[in-house]
Length: 454
Ligand SMILES: [Zn+2]
View 1 (cartoon, rainbow, N blue to C red):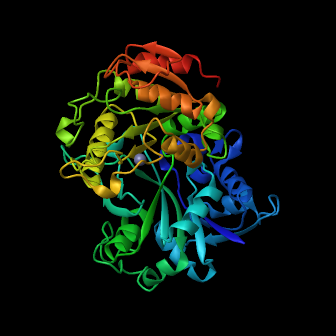
View 2 (cartoon, protein in one colour):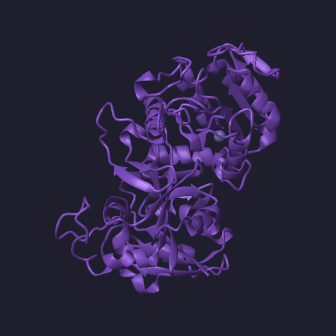
């Protein structure tokens, strides 16, 4: 029996006008209390053992959900006499926790393929898997850094110093955690955090928070934490404005369509010459060489707002040629994400091919000098993205500046748009022609959105 925990201790002070004296997790979206959406989602993904942690107006929450018989699940109510923080509440119920637990925040509207998240946790071998997503205001968000394998390497809390290039990955408040990883925290949960690396809790304070205390403390202690990046829908309902926007998105079907259970529409984007300037024949080898082309942030923001996945697919033979290491390429991509973030735009995923087929150059990395399946016009990276993000091929597009991109689109069964920037299709490498051609990415995105069937 899979176990889900719902943290429903929030009061909702800023929503008083909408709630009266009801607690925040009972606010209604689409005619139903938020908590009912969460229980239904958990049930849908096979979580039939549910613990609900309530504090303010616990009686109303207990009355609304009952024992779960309505859904065919078992709901147990954990009542907190006083707030202990998100992790503090869970630790107080340590004896009732299963070996692995899913943690949901009761004041968020969530539509995530929980089965996929759960399976990822089983596969990655980490003690905790944190659901992360890019957002449209990363500069004033707490950010998480992951390495190429998805392992979490750092937490960067706001404010972010200027000139730092960061991945746009935000902790959304959805976790899968192994019970045994919480064990070291149990004895000290009522006093102070067990690890010097933890912050945000004053000595003597009894509030212990997963995001601020427990996960940074685990990371400092060398515990394996995994970042699960996904574009799916999670938004907290903390203010009237956020509540109204969640209701509007729910009514418009945005919440429903965001789950990776539902096939996604994507635009695959070439990087050099399409998003950023071509700097030389060598390619971009350092962050200071990377600059966005005009209108690119606006174009990507339009895709974000339409719920279309923006997925970069790029050949980066600079790695195989030894001009740039993979950690350096990561910093280049962090700059790309930071520049877009300043303009409230984000990429859902960046895939790159580090390989190059021709051997015999000074400084090259022989292990990457291979005839791979991921270098465009081959379609390995596109197939990977289609699998990982459940992309509907027949509704998706590729936008690029070279005939290699056009050939890739043809090989992958995608429609293509050629942009006039970069090579502008004049590289002469392949014979494939585009479905549409225009001057800039912004025009290309407008064309795609006009011809989108959703
Ligand atoms: Zn490759």
